[in-house]
Every structure is written in C-alpha cells, then in structure tokens.
Amino acid sequence: MEHENNPQQSQTREAKFSVGIDLGTTHCVLSYIDTTEEDARVQVMPISQLTAPGTVETRDQLGSFLYQPHEHEMNPASRVLPWSSEPTALVGAIARNLGAKTPIRLIASAKSWLCHGGVNRRDAFLPAGSLKKLRKFHHCVQPSSTLLT
Image (cartoon, rainbow, N blue to C red; front, side):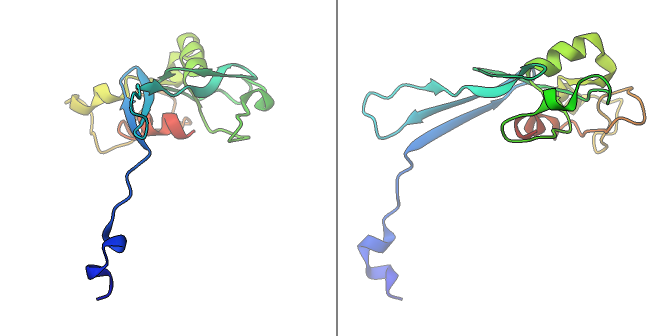
C-alpha cells in the first residue's frame, strides 16, 4: 500500500469553520467560528425567512414553527422563497404569526411530544387535532423541516 508510508497522504485537513446548530423547541439558531483566525469569535448566522407575505428578511433566529396555509389564505406568489418557488409549508416568523390566528394549521413545540405518553410517537400526527386533509408531520421531523422548507 503506497499511501500508508506517505506522510503527505495521511495528513488530515483541518476544517475552516466549526458550526453549531441549535434545534430548539421555540427557535433554531446557527452559529459558526472561523478556526483559522487566532482571535475568532462565535458568529450567529442570519437565516433568511418569510416575515410577511412576499417579504423575505434575515433574522438571527428561525422560529421552530411550521404552518400549512389554506389554499386561498395567501397568494402563491407571496410564498416564494429564494430557494423554493412553491414551499409546501411556511416556517419561522410568518408561520408563528399566521398560526396565532389559525392554530389548527400550526406545529409548535414539536419536541415537547417526545415524552408525551398519550400519543404513538412513531406516527405522523402533527398538527395535533388538525383537519384530516392537512399533511401530518412526525414530531422528530418538524425541526429539520423548518430549516429545509
């Protein structure tokens, strides 16, 4: 084996950044540090999100909220994101705001269901008590969906 005795091949590359991800019950936060800087400080990464229909802004936190709007609730053009022209659900600030008006379409505090004895934790059941025609999410999938939707 050639590579075993070649010190150049066995060297590992150091990562330029160290990234922290907090998938919190009420908010998600991304942070990072440049490991190549001697006096580096932790930086919070701004997260782009809809804050109102048709308005994308960056915030330091992404609310851990997922909202499924009614088909007539918002113009589809007002849901467009830089990375998705047709999101299946809304997340973050706009989800929290719309969910306050129509909570039956909102998923909030999904991690709280992890220890709830009254539900089958293997099922997709959120939003709890919602209409049958709404897409159901698993409580462990919602936080990551928040970031990817």
